[in-house]
Length: 347
Ligand SMILES: Nc1ncnc2c1ncn2[C@@H]1O[C@H](COP(=O)(O)OP(=O)(O)OP(=O)(O)O)[C@@H](O)[C@H]1O
Ligand SMILES: [Mg+2]
Image 1: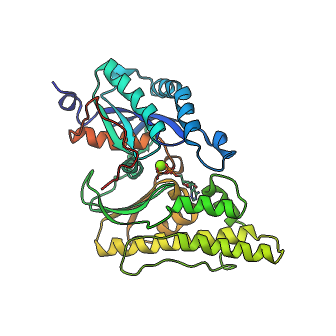
Image 2: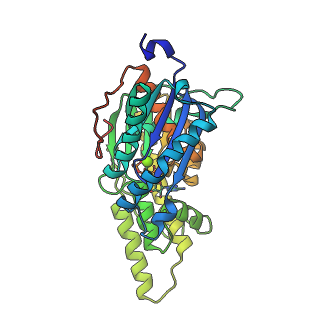
């Protein structure tokens, strides 16, 4: 009997994520119930470079991946005999980092004869909206289709219409910087530490969003985004202030910048949600951890919005397990020959 028939729909997925600077593993049941999730962050290692240093990242994955997988299985009180399939991030991401996770997953799948599933990292971010911890007393509702997914992360910003599981129709994406990238670059401009998103959010909490009004790229009628004009405007403001010998009002700059990003992301998503008459909105990816963005969506009552708990917004393997489960039950299992796809688009 194939694993699919034997275990559907209660399949348990062990997932591995190593696309960038987090080494992560998780065990998930039924596509939603999280039994364990371990994330080994490399932020401390990369802080000195002001961003992720690819070779340092892949070497660190090599060092930690075995321990992370072992710890995840222990926390779930399981071994590979209790697992039905192994999912792993195949791309997009840093090639050298992806290879470490994929090789680990292949080795485990080969040794245990478990099916192997290559997952798109962006799809994983979206599926983080389906997760809940096993100790949750009443299962929360799952997102309903058709839904609109706003994916806002370090490398991507896009709006996808999902008419069903694993179906992505890209309505728009960024023409230049990703939202998270803009947070990281602006943080550096105004002298805040990496990663920029949390630093800007913290500074903005003490600033006034009215002190500076930065431009918003609306691009009427389009669901595309652009953040480079905003970034340049912050840069010009910083240079003007510096040339006048004035101290940088870092908190006000952060608040003004954050307000511009949030307003554009929120309003453009709402417009698309109305246009396509969706049932739900999902907001996912690292920038969905931003408090102002979360409040904008949660303070409206037109659509039910799913935003993952903070710890599942940035990279983790629980989300890869969730997406891997839906691939598994839709019979999208891979062979051991697959290669990493550093530029794999979602749609
Ligand atoms: N509170 C926050 N506010 C704004 N941005 C945030 C916040 N927390 C994290 N971020 C941003 O999220 C990004 C990291 O998210 P994520 O881990 O999803 O990105 P990534 O995996 O590097 O990129 P991708 O998923 O596109 O491959 C960083 O750019 C970071 O600055
Ligand atoms: Mg990511």
